[in-house]
Length: 270
Image (cartoon, rainbow, N blue to C red):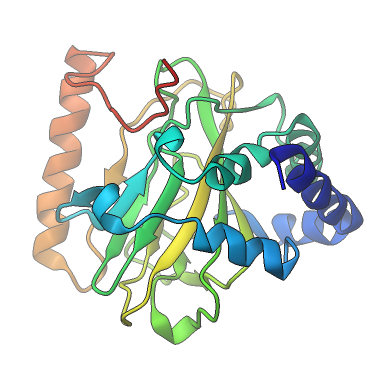
């Protein structure tokens, strides 16, 4: 299936369930979100998972903040992965997601800045964080994260689940299971703290990721912040180090608004 055919299926699902999804979004608490299970026919979801590359051909992000494989240069991989990613950028999907969330002037990101595909294996994790507030050019606000999970048979006890922290990284988290063929859509703003729990099994947790941006601030006022990581509640020392890291990187961005080094996690189509 190409991106238009995939989008046809996704649009039909979202439109059929938009009232229930809107209610889920509005009642989901401090980090607004909704999920759609069995998004695509199982055979197609299985094919998308089978198209994922091995970790050796992906970039690994390894630090106190995170440990995972990522990729955005999609012409280097199975074409089905690129079709799956860009299906979520179909204008019809953008429009219906806007209706569900109530967010205005949504724009998908053709460059896949911080989007694309990710894979996590045993021991991988993503600490509590809020995403960078803007796009690569610092011209639009990042407002939505769309995560499509494609690991067959994935269970909650495997770890590798999305965690939302409505009261910040020192509060209680809400777990959104990274269930096979599930789409999770969550808000990204100044207080949308989220993480991925450590993967506990010898299996691959695979995800197709997109961000939507907007010229309009989701907070109704101008703001900017770098991607900001914190320690989990039990990680006191790591939290101190990551707090210092936030202060350092924010200080550098005030001195150099366009950044000190280019973030190379985007799709260079040239």
